[in-house]
Length: 463
Ligand code: ATP
Ligand code: MN
Image (cartoon, rainbow, N blue to C red; front, top):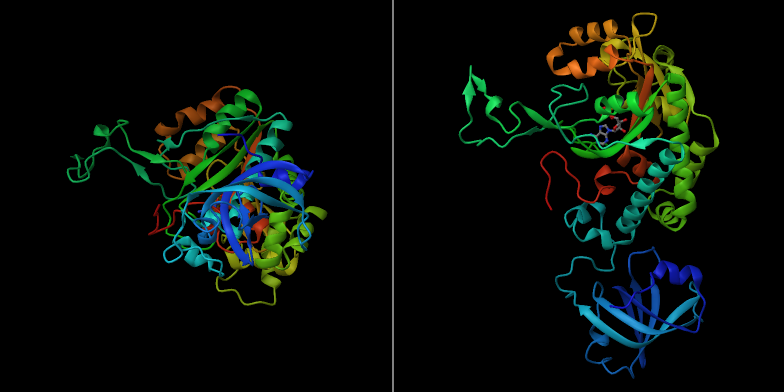
């Protein structure tokens, strides 16, 4: 098969009077006397290419006139300036071949507007719509930009395991990975005997690559992970998935302040990158998904994020002239209504909340000198809530061990983690960025199920 240029390249380069071949899917067809206009997309960009198909083509009546939305075709012809409004070039076809039909009586993606809920029920086809196609392109670009950001700054990517035996990483409920016969579970002492399981112990899908990334930060300096993570929590919200992707940098010789600086720089870099390189797709979202999108994106890249301590945040919340369902008091975990008040009402821009009470944060966060709080930071975004959670890690052996014991962790399983403090320990810090949450922010998409191709949520994992 001859190499074809993507429509994206054809439209951006645009020299005319040359013969080209395009392959793609029909978005729509308009018939006139003696010819048809075909709007064809190959998915490379939002815009399709207009193809003029004259009735003198040999298969005009047998094939071309029968084309409907979704049919796949190949068209060869001459690229010429277009007299029509809204496009500069069009293809005058010399030959059109049909690859596959899409019978309109059953093909679910017709021209009319379809709700995101409906599109979720046909996840295998929804990438062909303008909006979900744009999401997929933005997602790919953001993924690339994440690697670019870290690689340019000398970070190494670490592939941390998806199957883990760290029994409690403090981040959430886990899915067990087993090859045992569920009809005949081996039992010892009234409980499932995981000694007989594949790994000789209970294993799960990872909830975070952080602990393993720490091991490599203490070897290579600055590292990051970027992979899928899993949470078996029954959170049926527009911000939670059971399978989502996380970006987790981990930096040696780094304190909380530097951690926040890198996190803020990363978020701004990603948003700017998309505004520049996915302008057409972002414009689609700004027109059809969130009318204020551009202002919201600029509001993040143009100003410094607000930085306040948890204790300050609590006192702001206590003074708020707003009723909260969850009462505010020092020591509570911030609920989404509190986070929204801070980021959307009070400051109206991203807020970094630092130094949370140790009781509501995991064992690995570094204890502050007050003995009550830890060097944690959460970044709260307007419209999203928590987008990043991070901390300086506890690098002091005794303090870490104490906190692990307090948290009821089986030390036996974490000797390897304690080794990192036994041998050559250094101050270090990192954070986790929810990949789907940044995509949600950049696209304005309201539901996280629409920014991942095949979402997994409680009760739902089809396709
Ligand atoms: P939340 O409070 O929103 O449930 P969390 O505090 O449990 O999040 P962390 O364990 O700190 O989340 O994970 C780091 C980041 O991963 C979060 O800041 C968020 O962006 C993202 N994240 C966490 N849980 C989910 C989820 N279930 N689906 C999608 N993204 C998530
Ligand atoms: Mn968190």
